[in-house]
Image 1 (tube, rainbow, N blue to C red):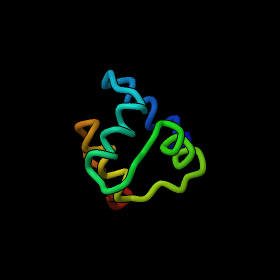
Image 2 (cartoon, rainbow, N blue to C red; image 1 turned 120 degrees about the vertical axis):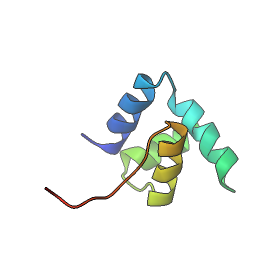
Image 3 (cartoon, rainbow, N blue to C red; image 1 turned 45 degrees about the horizontal axis):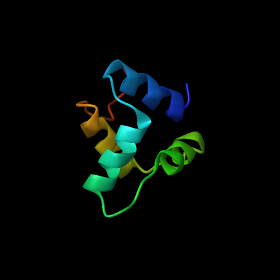
Image 4 (cartoon, one colour; image 1 turned 60 degrees about the vertical axis):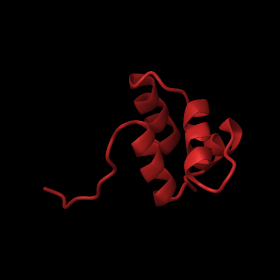
Length: 69
């Protein structure tokens, strides 16, 4: 699954939209995000780890990296 589908699925499960996530990113960074710019970053896999951490925060989730089992 690619980033855009993963984020869309998680957002839908939480009752949120990509538009909300773009607005949330704008409020928590010094950058302006729109639905289009967020979608493009997710589709092109050019989204930064720091941006994904903020998206996880908006989704009331935690982004972690862990050892394989």
